[in-house]
Amino acid sequence: MLEARDVRLQQQLGRETRTPYLPGYRRHYQPDSHPSRKTRALLMIMVLACFVMALAVIVQYSRMVGVSREIYRTENRIEQTVEENQALEREIARLSSAERIETIAREEIGMRTPESSQLYLLSRDIGGDAEERSVGED
Picture 1 (cartoon, rainbow, N blue to C red):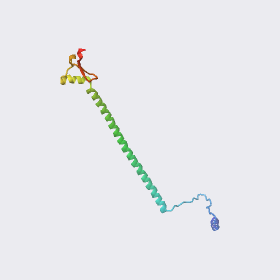
Picture 2 (cartoon, rainbow, N blue to C red):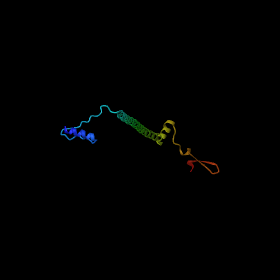
Picture 3 (tube, rainbow, N blue to C red):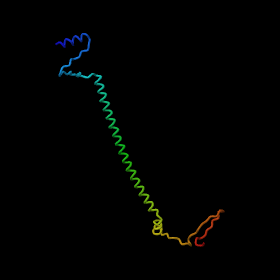
Picture 4 (cartoon, helix red, strand yellow):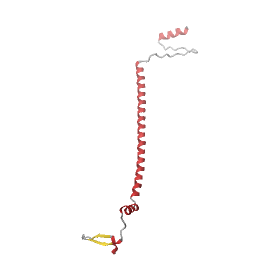
């Protein structure tokens, strides 16, 4: 009782009141049951901002996966094209070999190697006169 009177007296004098220390005494904080409009609006803005940021991360990740797939496909096409190019170069080398051309000329077309009397060497003089001579005449 004495303490309650002291507290009232201090309140009347305008001094700060403190609860005296009592063993086992705890002050219980009871927040307002309804937050203010400002607090609710701020909370909603924060939740919305988190949602938008999460959505942006998901969209960027989706784009990254799409680009990664496209890079993989392009690398595969490049590899296939290089292999095809190498095969075509080997085919060109095989088809343009001198032995193959000579075999085709002899067997399919019926050509034969000319004799030395059938060869003629043409030379051109500076004056424009062409001279013809047989290779076998030398």
